[in-house]
Image (cartoon, rainbow, N blue to C red; front, top):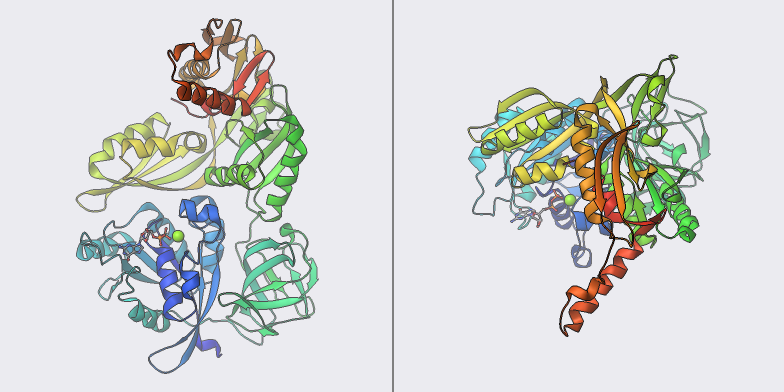
Length: 598
Ligand code: GDP
Ligand code: MG
């Protein structure tokens, strides 16, 4: 195929607006999807992804397409992860494209992730084709939404594509638009090889698989390649494309998208965003914007049963093979024993890893409260990065503590604006902007400490807006704040895994509510339990649980044996997730309680 007949594009959308359905419809229309594949959305393959309706690992497909002009084209549909935690991966995937379909649900309108994706697409000068989806629904309001897109996104909607990804209506016309509006790849086929890595993963048979787009030059099976960032060299053992299954090729040229295997053992040697070149004739400069993604959220993961430690370690290693952003190191806690301090891109990433550990590797876990990274400036001038409250130096050694801030954009119907503002104020946010998108929809912009949204922000936002708000954020910088370490003591013993770093003004409130929550979730013992929250030597909250007197089943009067059995089973289930802390049993809920801040 000629370079001018290649079209590299992606679909961007707010979650649930129909990205995966539209992708499937395109594959079906072009004959790439058989009835058998159709059962499940092709582009969301991982079980967890399907359940959560989000794409974590992007998929990419080459689609041969004969247009109405009689010419043959190659469309490369480059999928992007669907969550804010993975915005760097999204930005690299978009960098591999020349155009993007902006899919907006015609019954919903522009949402926070719509905008976040548009900003990323504009950063890469992509040709954006607006598409209104779900026009089969009676509540679709194409005129209003088109106006919204023109006004907020600033795209010309005079020739808007109206489609139903579900019924297929409008999709054939959309294919023509993709061909005619998306620019052909630029780049010179005789220049030295320059290819952008936009995805990589570990295959247990083939080793690291690298997905790339050729910006200049060409690549051949058997040739030597070099990664720009680390100068490491590899020999291309396998080269191919996905269409939709893997197919081998001998050579790929400028503008093409494909995969390669080159005996790469470690995902860290082929990172997303890096540039591949030919060591025999290297390109002058890499594709700009390479960065190593940094974990932003940390927590301790401990096996419930200490003999599961090796199993947990093994499982983390296996997951890390496929996830360059997951970090972990061994950590010991007095309360929880041997475990791991793990770093994640964000809360969703953390959730997904925890769930996979439990589900795929059958490890029962106790997770400690998530923490962000703090920059601690010591009086001696040294700057420490602290991701575990337990590692905060003593107060007298600290000059100042800085915490990460994010810029957050919330889209919400106007009747909830008041609720959102008070939530953001409560979370120490600074309002930066408030704009009316239409007479009924508002965009609110805040700068807010990342730590505040790591706890329970999403749930709170959902509840104060009845689920109507959408949110996106990006990390800004580190800012000075009056932060202190708060410890939890149970019967005078500090539970190191429950220490948190909090804003001084919020410490009392948080200490009190945490102590109260712990009182509720720690099962009664045969002795009195005293729960205290402290800052340094100062006790800021105290709760007491009196000793147990009765048998748990005593309150199930009469002969209702099933109810009694259920209760006992429930208790057993609870036991599985408990840790002995001194003489006190602490259930997983207690650690979860440490997460929520109200
Ligand atoms: P994604 O999160 O953007 O990938 O969205 P999905 O493709 O998973 O779609 C979200 C939901 O909307 C699913 O239940 C789809 O069946 C539904 N959906 C997608 N497109 C259409 C459409 O054109 N019409 C209707 N009625 N439903 C649709
Ligand atoms: Mg999807």
